[in-house]
Length: 177
Image (tube, rainbow, N blue to C red; front, side, top):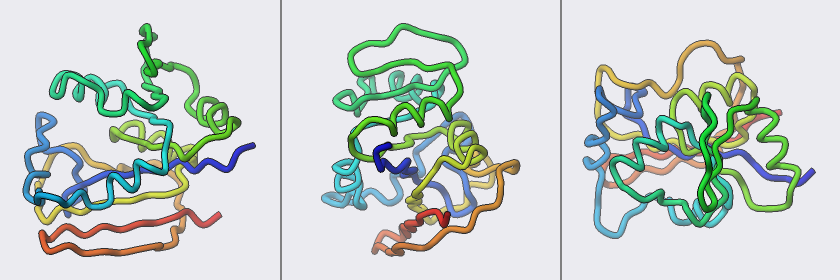
């Protein structure tokens, strides 16, 4: 089996929300700074496959119109099959089987691009190997939580912690097996 890590790279508010009510992501602009990508391009250079939830995929397509990772193999996790296009495939089977199938082939790491339901599912199945969380300096009070109850406890090892002048703090963890 290839040694491909399943990596979550995501931003959230200080109180744990990845979106404000109505899937509003405007709070992310609080830390926008020209020329600063908070390591995102460097991270993308380490991955060649994307796993994303159908709701998040549909939101991106509605808001942006073009999937930003169309050059990568992309698996959209859905309850209802849909025809794929280009590098995008829709998958409705067990997510653990998909991850095993992807990891069986040589390649770079796998990017978990959200949303919260997919993250929760992958945590329940203990499939996420590395987590990078960028914490935005805002308390939203409500919205879509990144973490919810119901997954097994798992100790993590802090790999890196970096703070930026915008107030964003980025934490990088790897799982302790």
